Length: 195
Image (cartoon, rainbow, N blue to C red):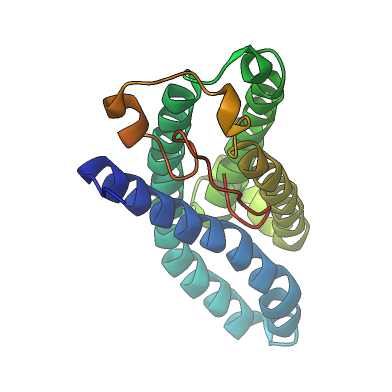
């Protein structure tokens, strides 16, 4: 297999996306089901001190995760759409529409998740009501994250592309820069792979 700079770049962006998604879903899962219930047993003063300490530290992770997800998501989407141009009408008139619709829903869900995560870890007085009812909003954020992971799994299944026989001959440069599984011989991915 010929390994190019674009292949390495795609792999780096894939790692960024996976790590940031782990934080975006795993963090709220831990906070909702372990941290908040345990923290409620603390007296008021230590409880507030713990919440503030966590907020300060977690806000840095939230900002990094949002940046990673936006950068890697944009790169992955553009690379996939570029590679899929070589696929025939069976893809363009069928799965491509579903992919675009799922991407739109995924993008809107991601914006909602980013907003809630930022509101919960920020300092804005205008968004204090989110922090005052943190348990509810963390649970909402977690539910949105789980739905987003499900959509990502379905999108990743569409990355297998059309059967190899239906792919038009594409220039070597176009297929070399395709993300893993979208070149002239697509791999069979699993639903566990993130989109």
